[in-house]
Length: 120
Image (tube, rainbow, N blue to C red; front, side):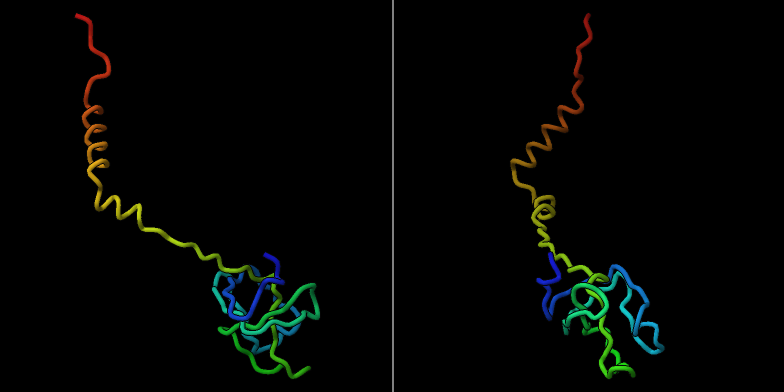
């Protein structure tokens, strides 16, 4: 997914952090690697190709040089991947059908039968 597909409200996870530019200033809150954040603002980036973002969960006051709140380079983040989890497999284990039960019983019976009959 390209950063051009990013949007306000999108959930992202911090995967890298560099303390450069405004982030070196005292009192600037920075995102933590591994934490999930929500984009609240997107703007062109002055220092890197692409965009910079502001996060709902990280808020800073205006910077003393330009009066704007610091933003973070999009390359430090990746979109959160949502996976639809199905518990059908677990429900099947808890409530097996008759066919599943018969298969398990047959497997158990054949497991204990000798595979070779000794010659007498």
